Length: 491
Image (cartoon, rainbow, N blue to C red; front, side, top):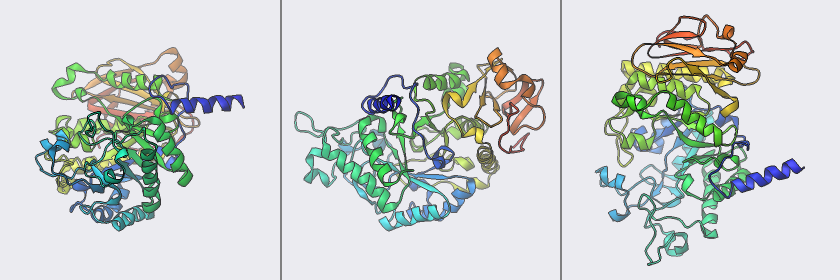
């Protein structure tokens, strides 16, 4: 009883404060459909040929066939049309589209913007996704809103105001909600449940969630679970207290851009390991992260796109990392066929170049993604545990250029992942401590067919010769486990 009281008290404290060391607390348990899933982020203005919800619905079978299990759609609710650029974000102005309608500048949180279709279209989309086994999450934008939102006339207290009577703008120059007001919290929690009830969505990604008081999200979690117990919340931003109660994952863990290209001398492959270990040291035990290398923000702001600057082979390596690392992988629309339109922007219509699917690079990328999806689906060790219990980093002979880690879970054969992060061949030896010898056992880093490999040759019991951006994924123990994907050599 005392343990239960202490746990409740710890969760309550975590819901009122941010920061600090939460490593002694367990992360909340999430539904398997998310924890073992693959998320696909859709930017409607680019993904759908006509930018409509009906256009997205038509392509749901394609998404399902890739192996995706969760569709995450950027905001499609009514946007502000005010042309006063004092309330436009600098990015919006810089885009050159002269379009006031920003998906993250909402004036009506309950109804679909006509640009995308109707409320009925969104209901149809979610229903169609559910019929073929896909979950759907929406994007909540509760940090700020559009300056001409009708509720400002009836509820001016919803906004944060400056001492001089002007409306307070947030980081992106949109008016901010005032979360000190109970009426604001109730309005937004009512909206959240309405979206679940009216459109049957399965959860939410919370835009700049880390800038909103954590206790609000804990209250929102309670409201959600009372309506749909297996729903989820993802937070943009990161704080170790997030996942003790409110959130199922934090949105944002991806390899450092400095690993690639001319800036490679400023960073090393070891930075991947150190970043992971720093998080694991303070986050709730078993915390999850949504692993990605590109999203709507990066595709809008980072030009040339990462497909170009990191090279096709470099991005392939990142995908292997994303799918074997703990957490949940996320693909941004077009990643699965190496699409990298140079003019992509979330601020206007910049459709995907679907013809890229039929290029050698597009076909190669799609094949790799499908192999990775099947590997992750067939090997429970890759999805059973997150954080310290599920992943152990191993020393390697060339830590600036290569990484190695082992994924573990009870009842599963451990899986070893060795990767070369350079565009040149590399000889890599895995160096085990005495303690690691007991867990990995040198003799059980098995010979024979790897689970998945590219430009990888075993040169010894624990040594490998890896070609440019080569990788090796193989069993590293003798415990029973999932069925391997028999794939080796070039993909």
